[in-house]
Structures are given as C-alpha cells and as structure tokens.
Amino acid sequence: MKKNSFTIATALSLAAALALSSCYIRAEDKKENARSISVSGTGSVSVRADQAIINVAVVTYNRSVVEAARLNAESVGKVHAALADAGFAPDSITTNSYRIWQDSSYRNGVQVRGDYRVSNSIQIVTMDTRKAGTAIDAAVKAGANEFSSIQFASTRTDDALREARTLAIKNAAEAANLMAKTAGAELGKIISIQEAGAPTQAARAEGAKMMAANDFATPINAGDNLVTVTVYCVYELK
Image (cartoon, rainbow, N blue to C red; front, side, top):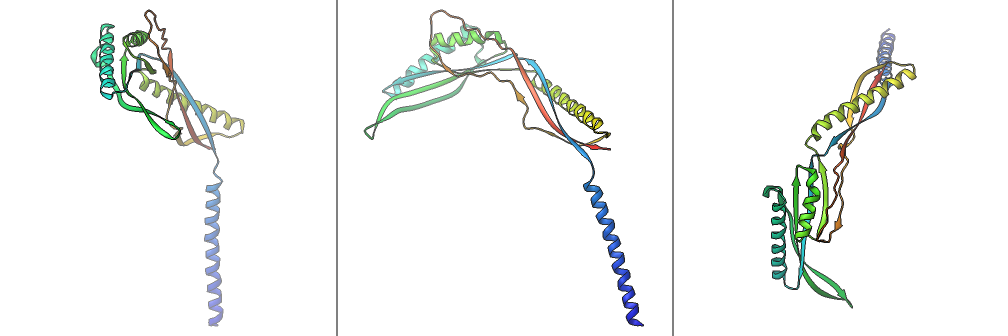
C-alpha cells in the first residue's frame, strides 16, 4: 500500500513538472516567433558653406639649420604682413605646425646628409568664403611655397545635422510601413534605433605644390556642404 502511494505521488510530480516545462517552452516559442522588420533610412541636408579654412606653408632649405630657420622666419613675416594688408585680422592667421629636419640619402650604402628644411604651416580662417582666393594669392606672392588644403564649413552644421536625423527616421518609417502593408501586416511600435557611424559631410580638400606669380587671381567657389545621416530601425509587426 505504501509502495502504490509513492508511485502515485511520483507520477503526479512528474506530470506537474512536464506541465510547467511545456508552458515554459510555449512561452519561449512565442517570444522567439515575435515578428519584426528591420529597415534603414537616410536623410541629407544641403547647407551653404560660410567659412573657409586655408592651410599654406613656407618651406626653406639651407646647409645651416640656423640660416634655414632665419630665412623661414623672414618669409613667414612677409606672409603675415601680406595677409594683414589684404584685410585678414591677426587672430584669423595662426601657426598650424612648425618643423625642422635634415634631408638625407644613401650612396653606395653610406648615408649622406643634405640640407636642413624648416617648414612653418599657416592656417587662415575667413568667414567670407569669397576671400579664400585672396588669402591664397596674398600668401603665395609673399613667399608661401606649399599649399596643404582648403576646407569649407558652415556655422549651420548642427542645425543641418538635426534636420538630417529627422529626415532619416522619417525615411525609415515610410519604408517599414510600405513593406509591412505589402506583406499584409500592420506596423507596430519601434523597438530600436541606431545611427550608422558618424554623420558624413561633403568635404573639399586638395593638396598641391604652389608657385608664386606676379599677377593672378585664384578662383575659389565654396558651393554647398551635404550633411548625411543613416539610421537603422527595428519595428514590431502586428
């Protein structure tokens, strides 16, 4: 009699465990089978450039490092004076980098020391992009002999970035809604939003050697900068 009671109790315990296990599995299955849709959206906003950043350099050579540095300082002084005469404020002209090094080469396995080089890189910032060409011309005529880059930026970039993000999310929502309806489903709430890396901007930058001339005018057109944002969104499907 006691043996039968133990058998019945054990059977009931196993049945209860199986029932709980069955419920747990069904709940997990339901969770795993929840439907969703993943889409991407892109938003782009064009913004007018209102700032130009120009980088030029004065590079001098001499067998003597002292003389190379002296010649460089003299030329840079002339460049600063020429830019001031062209209407650029002193605080818009800054030193970007200053370097001294010695050229060297190998002949028959032996290192041969050459001239010393001194490079002073000058950055010019103007809030009038129409003056970018004027800055380049003034610097080159005064002694700048290397041109590193010219970049155009906008003080409205933050506003453009907000607009681009809004457009990107709207674009993703439209795509998700269209796909859901086409599939015979209804779009539910948004589950997640992720921005794809850093927002991109159309950048204009060039590198080239420059030669001074007596009379010329460098044409520079700032154009527009394009701020682009891409987002990835996941929506529930009903």
